[in-house]
Structures are given as C-alpha cells and as structure tokens.
Length: 204
Ligand SMILES: C[S@@+](CC[C@H](N)C(=O)[O-])C[C@H]1O[C@@H](n2cnc3c(N)ncnc32)[C@H](O)[C@@H]1O
Image 1 (cartoon, rainbow, N blue to C red):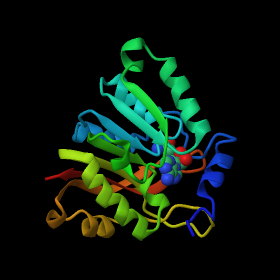
Image 2: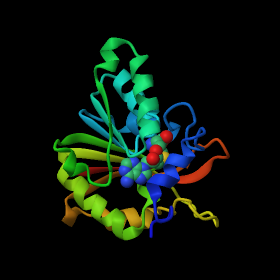
Image 3: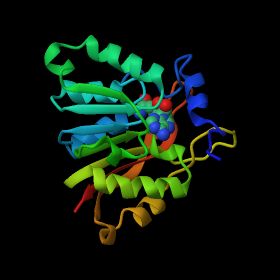
Image 4: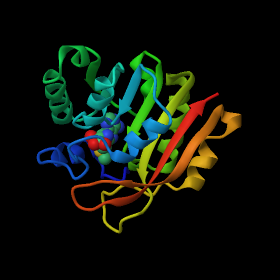
C-alpha cells in the first residue's frame, strides 16, 4: 500500500479541497537556488506540478514547460494561473492530468525534469522504477532537479526522508548519471519549514 493509503488519488483530491500545506504561493526558494546555480533548459517537465507555481515561474523565464499532476483541481488552478500570464509566457505552458510516475509514457523527451516534493511521496521500489523511467524521458545531457524532505514525521500520510546517501546510490555513473549538486536545503510549507535535500542530477 502507498504511504497515502489504498487510494492516493482520493487522498490528494481531498487535500486540494483547501489550500495544501505545500502551496506557499510561489516556487520553493530552494528550487530557485538550484536553477540559479544550474540553469535548466527547455522543454521542462514538472512532475507533480500541483497548482503550477514552479511551472509558471519557469515559463516566465522563457522555458517551455509541461506540468503533470493527477489531481484535476490542482491542474485547473495551474491552468487558471497560466491564463492570467502575459501571452508570451502563457503559450509556453501546458498542464495535463496524468500519472507523473511514468514520464516516458508522455511520448516526448525533456531537457529538464523538475521535482518539488514528488519523489519523497513514494516507497523506495517505486522511486527506483521512477528513476529508470526518468532516464528514458530525459534527453542526453538532460537534468533532474529534486527537492525532497530530509526528515520523517511520525504521522501517517506523510512523505519519507530522502537522504544524500540514497541519492548517491541511485544516481550512479554506471546507470548514466552525474550528480552536479547535492546538499541540505529547506522545504517551505504553510505549517513550518522542513529540513530537505536539494539535488541536481545530469544524464551523461
Ligand atoms: C507535495 S505536492 C507538491 C506540489 C508542487 N510540486 C509544489 O511544489 O507545490 C505533491 C504533488 O504530487 C501530486 N501527485 C502525487 N502522486 C502523483 C502521481 N502519481 N502522478 C501525478 N501527480 C501526483 C499531488 O497531487 C501533489 O500535487
């Protein structure tokens, strides 16, 4: 069973009935810092894009972005934000309701995949399959940007801790990855800031 019960979609649907704790009104500052140090190229895929703030900020920077989330309400909010942008940024944005665990099934390849709070939702085996699929969806030299909790909460339905050791074991040179950056960070939330891991991995 998933960390979010037998029906994770029903769980996240319910959370989006109000403003979710991760919806801080803009992109996570730690993601913006990663982008400043390792500028992303387009096209970009935003996995688990939520209400779209990260995708919107990348489109404002001139990048073409596809945001994917499995919650209808989240994608509706993201599309509304896109609709309020100047046309030159709005035309760079697309949002889809889909399962973001299989980016290769989207039928396109990406220069960057951005992940703000998606990877840490899944158990280690699911994360392993996701990383294998990412390798297919990313273009050669493409980058995966990750921000995940680095602490475990003793409450049900919460993300797991993603430590630097796990990422070093998963993103190895023999699997075609190079780690460009891996460091402690902070994940902002409406409740309290959470210790996090920020990383940028590149396909060789
Ligand atoms: C912690 S939230 C982060 C949202 C957004 N990236 C942000 O930083 O505000 C995780 C998001 O992943 C979405 N999600 C969870 N499992 C998913 C799946 N299998 N496919 C697509 N989206 C999923 C949830 O609906 C939620 O919007």
